[in-house]
Image 1 (tube, rainbow, N blue to C red):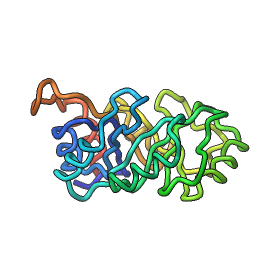
Image 2 (cartoon, rainbow, N blue to C red; image 1 turned 120 degrees about the vertical axis):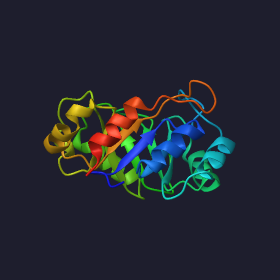
Image 3 (cartoon, one colour; image 1 turned 90 degrees about the vertical axis):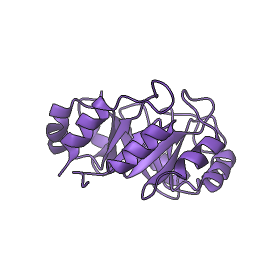
Image 4 (cartoon, rainbow, N blue to C red; image 1 turned 60 degrees about the horizontal axis):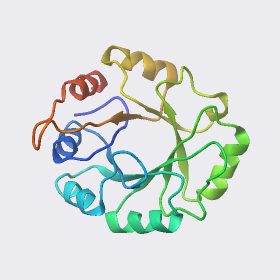
Amino acid sequence: MSLLLPVLVRGINNLSDARYCAGMGADGLIFTLDPALPGAVDVATVKELAGWVAGVEIIGEFGSEMPVSEINRLVEECSLTRIVLNLPATGSWPDGPVAVPALVELPQPVAADTLDQLRTALTAGFELITRLSEATLPTSTQQQPSWLSGNPAPAQVAELIAQLQPTGLILQGGDEIKPGIRDFDELDALFEALEE
């Protein structure tokens, strides 16, 4: 299935989501690997679920308190191609170079000096994530690629893409009702709206 723009799915924690999203054309699956964040999974779960899918990026999500040395260890152990970093507007920045490119979620708006600090800290490169709840992209990101995060109403997808022209969408996965049973109605409608 060909989609209008790249799609990543966040919060992957079960085989149903991993296989469904990969089959629907998602470009990447985001696993929360930082135990300080809600919905975190362990390395064994990431490896097991990644072994059941093909053709998608495996991405790890981390908060601001995890040391870069630990992030880089998990990048290698889980064969991550990118990471998502949830960072505060100031303060806890990465304490060294991250081994792979990052998608960075910051409180909005983003100041130009913040982007300069990120360029210095994240030498492998980065792109910003803008939450769907933000009405428009901050002016400081106009020259910085930005991903749109959140599950929009399917009827709004085409308008959001036309208006905001994001690099891609980051959708939110969900939990199984019980092992092997998952309601995909919301994601199904979004993937259908994203079909070319």
